[in-house]
Each structure stands twice: as C-alpha cells, then as structure tokens.
Length: 250
Ligand code: PGA
Image (cartoon, rainbow, N blue to C red):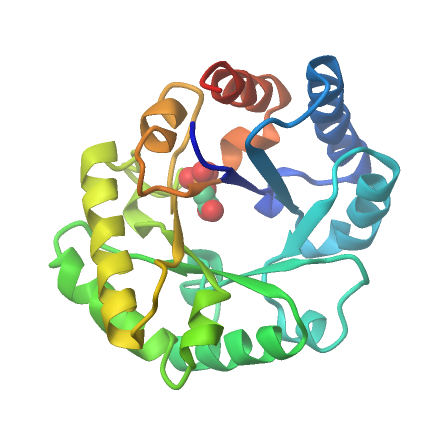
C-alpha cells in the first residue's frame, strides 16, 4: 500500500451490548499492540446508537480513537463529544424495514449540518437493485445528495460506493466484483471532480460483503480509499483476519 487506507467498521445491530463491544475492541487493540502501530490503516468504529456513549468511553481507554454514528437527527443535534464521523445515507436509513426512510434531500441537509458541526460525513451512494443502470443511478443520487454544497464542503466528505444488493443480510447478497467496484468508484470520482471543479479527487471507499477473503482485492485498487465493513467487522476472529491480511500488504 502506498497510501493510508480507511477501514470503517459499521456494527449496526450485530453488536448488541457493551461486553461484545469490549471483546471486539480488545481483540483489535491487542493486534495493534503486538504490531506496535497501525501502519497505513486508519480505523473508525460506528456502533449502534444504544452503544455510542459506552463505546466512545471504551475507545478513549484504548489505543483506538475514531468513532462514528449512523446519522440519527437527534444525535446530530447533540452528539457525544469525541465523535469525528457520521455515516449518512446508509441503506438501513434510506430503506428501513419499517416506516418511511430518508431521501437524498434529507441526507443533503444532514451533510450540511454535520459539516457545520465539524463532523466528517461518510456518505453512502449506490444502487438498490442490480438490474438498474448503475452509472445513471449513481450520478442522479450524487446530484441530489450533494446539491448546493461548495467544492470545499464536498471535498470534506468521504463517499462510500455501497450497492445495496451487495450488503450482507439482503437476499442473494454478494460482494461486488472488485474490478466493477473500482470502475464505479472511478465514475464517482471523475463525476464529482468535474462537477465541483475540484483540484483533488474525493475519497471513495467500497462497502458490501467485505470479508477476509476479498478485502485485499478491494484495497489493492489504487482508486479505492478504503472499505466500510458491516457484519465481518463484528466477528472478532474474522475482523482480526481482515486486519492481518491488510497488515501483510504493507
Ligand atoms: P456488510 O454491511 O459488510 O455486512 O455487507 C455493510 C454495511 O451495511 O455498511
């Protein structure tokens, strides 16, 4: 790896209590301690809402630092100190199993609010169904999600290309092919750079069924700035396996 890569661990409701959170963080902490440093990896942990306060406390006591939350409005208004990131536009919020979800318009106002509060938005973009024209869908979603943002504001966002059909837990879910994901990520980077007249590209991660079997293929792509990992990051052996594979690349 010749650039720092970002690994976002999105616990969702796979981590149900503080004891489980502690086990995962202890395993990661031990791994990092045995190596002496993180190398070129930056780790962000996003617990479920009910665990935000206790996880932030656990993180402060460890060598791990960064934490995030899955953009709930009340938390955006008043979030616990020490959070640096907010995940916005995640499929669990856009398309919840019960009730109406967020739209690109509401996500847009949350991005603006997060930036005002000096949180870094990690914004998920991606088609829900495999059958649609992904390029068309993504461009349309970008236009609405980032409408009215200045180039500086867009540059301060991190984007995740996360096709919803690839997220584990959905019927027939499987990771995108790394080549295809890299192509879509290039489309996102080029489109945003041209539309907002940016000097540098935005950071774009890949998300959707990342595991110890495929993580190296995604991370090896020059244009993929990191990965957003759900389920596999909540299984401590599997997550340690992922991190070990990434360390072996350095
Ligand atoms: P997954 O989840 O890695 O379990 O597919 C990703 C996510 O929902 O952010």
